Image (cartoon, rainbow, N blue to C red; front, side, top):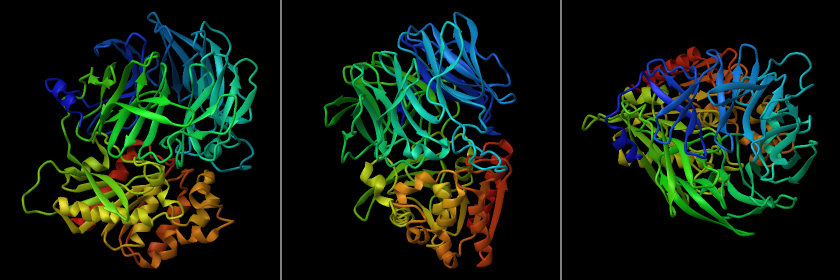
Length: 637
């Protein structure tokens, strides 16, 4: 895993904490801009103050942009000539987002939005900057963010995220896309006359699962539908000749964790064609720079950067780079120069902290070499191993994390952590803090399986738990635990299970269908799919997985609800959830907590005030970690 990183950085000086590099962007000349911060390892504050840092091609800092000590920064984007950087300054105290341009050592505020703004992009000629803007936003964008208070007339008005444009030389911000349409993603067309976007009418949190592919005219704002796919879609990109749109399409459970096959459709409109049917991998990121697209795929336990050759009906992938390490950048998983020859990303794995790495193509080979060494002194926190096993005809994979020091002859407790989604995958990320690191330091093994329903092995594997939540995927997990016990000194009598979101549901399901685990922690779970259907703010995601609504096919919703088998529960289970969780409302956690009490199973419930699906406040994160580790210590040690 990222062995070159360890070798290059061995002699560097440790920082005061974990140095984070987010939203890496690459200039035409090879300079790199990123949103950077330092997180103290001992406190683990998740949202420290950030700055836009510009580095040379060799990693030296050229300038640090930080005009507002109380603001946050996002989405740096280089102008086509590489002379300027556009980014968004967010002042949460005033609920204001300002599009700012850094050029020639000076800053210019081009436009402000009272609400939310993100994702600035320069037009191909560099004369205009577009961005996504939500005027008068009632909440932060995205279903994982804390929902607005449910008071007054519910559903009377929705936030609408729109494409807006402003002249790069200065002028008024102009909303372009229709006022009744929520735009999720967009990209300029190569001629600069308009945009391709994913969008839907109505509630933006809920309707991403029924989004359409649209074209928007940059002048008059007219919008037309290019395609209405039967799958979720992400990252639309237009070919250099403007004739074709390619995008990632598949069964996706959350906006953000992208995954699927590669599709193409004429920009003029038509029926999308799946270019990769039967592919045993998942496309996670897509860009069209240069003559051919570039994709990042998850192939089993490897992240792969590929050059893609297209025909009218197929796509051929030529691997440029492959590693178990995880890349991340501003516009997908890797930043790519306009000509498609230079690459940059923040790269990390379980044993190596993130660093910015860059590289240029040499034929069909790409070597990404670290240009920063800010995290070199942090060292390894665990020993990571990819575990593979077979179950019911499926090849399944997961990650086993072990304490660095083991006592010969001793057996250790293990926590199985089930990822959210279910359309997602656990990929390597540095264990700088948090529950996983603390568990390992306290002598636990941690197992993170990618059972059926996950990314990495193609759409058939991702779709294998449709109408079978908790069925085959739990059997995959239990078989994985058995495989781990054959490979590591794990005590089968001291097993715990933990998950958040879909992982929270899986924890609730597991403790009502197995007594193998002696303690469980369910974060933001789902206990009753029938009541959940009417409580959550994103019910559109459920139809592709259940086949129909809870009102049209209640039997399958009842069958897959942990409450249906609550009397089988024996496992002590800790439960937590955010008070304003849009995705998995707290009522679900209350139901499960109440039921466990009713049947006499030890349980505890914590609802965090003001929090959404993602717990953000440092004091609440600390409390959750302390309670989780204490719960496992109580029942497994």
